[in-house]
Amino acid sequence: MKIFTRLAACLVLSVTALSAVSVTAQTPSGDPVKLRIGFQKSSTLIAILKARGTLERAVAPLNVRIEWGEFASGLPLTEALNAGAVDFSADVADTVPVFAQAANANFVYVAQETSSPSAQAVIVHRDAPVHTLADLKGKRIAVTKAAGSHYLLLAALARAKLSPADVKISYLAPADARAAFERNDVDAWFVWDPYVASVEQDPGARILIRGDGLASYQRYYLASTPFAQAHPQIVDIVFKQLVEAGVWTKAHPQEAAKILAPAWGLDQATVERANAWRTYAVRAVVAKNFSEQQAIADTFYQAKLLPKPVDTASALVWDFAGRRASAWQSRGQRLDAQSLQKVRMPNRDGFVTDPRPGRL
Image (cartoon, rainbow, N blue to C red; front, side, top):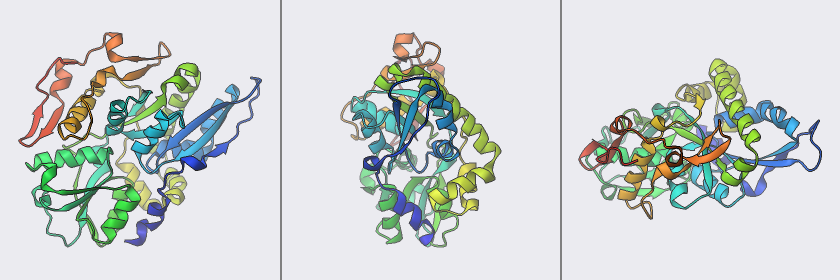
């Protein structure tokens, strides 16, 4: 299981060691605007933009100086966003903004990557007597708190008519979870790509199930509300660059893998497999694609993992037309009953539709 050693070692919080990339502006005068971007190893499009230098070139006319900070997972990244240490957050799993909203973080949803459920999976030891989700009962499970895989865990337990109390959960950062799995300290690991792709080459592990049918796994790009309101043009440019990077990555899988392989500590073929599970289709957030956020919030609250109920419709979403942050509620945009009926909330009896149609 050494194939992933380098990647696991790399996944450490590095907000204290942000690397600055200066951009020389041609037109504006005065001090440069600082844009601090936080990302994870799984933040593929930000990694592509950073490596190719396309974002720096795009913001150069605005006299912007970019600083990059790598984080172990989404939760510490949004905590840094709320603390004012980060201005723009690379893609985080759909669960992460829910926890940030519960903590009253001052952020705005900027964009989303369309659903990639197969980019999450449950990893078990190859010779373990675990062949169905029901076999997880009593087992030791590693998961990163508030990650998309955390919601996958709750959904998987519900599908098997189990509760969190029926398993032994350890909340671990990806690097620590990998180490625990290699030591056989845990029986199963709920995680996302590129970790999942590495397992396909690991003779000691196998994939129990992928996330299809359990969690849609949308990823969101976030920004500090004060920064976005003060610099709407920068938000527009970053969004456009992300869209273009997504198109480029899918159109040039080998070139993208060549860029990402050294950073991820994986061979190019494995990186290509990991990228194949992601859509990388970036778009503005719209109500019909935002309805699952409420189901996620309710699920975590029911599991006593959130301190209070969260009304996701009150979250701020970037309005590109108006160049401002506003909530769905203030725009008069309500999540319709048809959208809500498509949302399935996990409970001990399995999946049920949201019992409160029209609540939002």
